[in-house]
Length: 345
View (tube, helix red, strand yellow):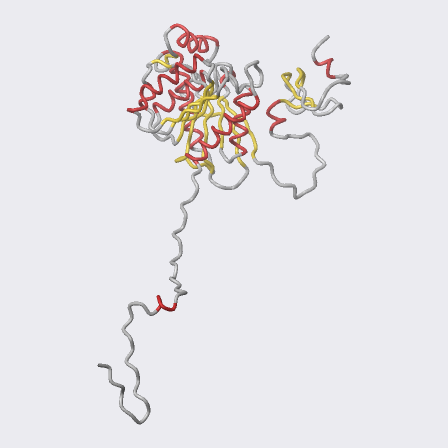
C-alpha cells in the first residue's frame, strides 16, 4: 500500500498530524500536515504561511503577518551563477531588518523553518538558502563539513568545499540586503549546529553585521575564528551537549580580545538539537525558552527602541509661605496717610 493510500481513509487522523502524501497546494509528494478529516493537506511551508485553495473569509480581514516566496539569487559558488532560496517578508510597510539563516548539511529542516517564521512574525525579513536544491552542492560538501568537526577538531571553514558554502551564504546575504523595503544597515545571521558554524564563518568575513545568533554550534577551525567577529554574538546551547560545549570554549577563549561582546545562554539539561521537533532531544519548554532568548537578542540589536525625548522643564512649586519669602529683601513699610514714617532704629 502506498503512503498516499493511507490518506484516503483517515478515521483516526487528528488536526495537525503529519503524514507522507501529496500537498494539495503545490502537488509535491512530501511530508504534509492533515488539516481536517476531508483529506485536505498542506506541506510545511504552505501550512505555516496559511495558504488556502479556497477561502470563506470576508473582505477586510487583516493581512497575514508575513508572506513567503521562492527566489533565485546570484552567486559565484555555483556553475550556473544562481542559487535558490526562500524569503519570508513581513507585510507591514516599513523597512525591515534582515536575518540570513544558514542551513545545516541537512538543508531546510523544520527547525530552521520554525525559527524563520518566528523571526518573520516579529518583523524581520528572512532568507533561507535552499542548500539541497543548489547546483553543485551535494554529499561531498556535507562530508567535508562533518569530517572536519569529527576528525580535525573543528569544521574547516576557510578552505575546500566548506569555504564554498560560506561564499554561497555571503552572496545570499548581499542579495538580502539589496531587496526592497529592507534596512541593509541592520542585518544578522542565524544557524544551528554545523549551520551555526557556517554562520560564524560568514560573520568573520562580514563587518557590516549587527548581530550573530548561534544555536548549539559545532567547533570550527581555525579555533580563534570568532576573533574576527565585529558584531554582538549570542551563543545558545545545552548543558549536556559536549560538541557544542567545545565551540563555546573556543568563544570564551577569544572573548577578551573580541571586537564585540559575547553572550551565553545555557539551557540546563538540554542536548544537541533540542530545538528540533523531529528528534528525541526536542524539549518544548527548553526550546521555547531558547527561541525567546534568541528573538529578544535580535530585537535588541536590530530593533532598538527609539531614544526617549528629553523631559519637559518642570516649574518649581512652593507650598510653604515662609519659604516663598526666604531670601527676599523686606519691603519698607509705607507711612500712614498724613503722617511720618515710623522710626526703624
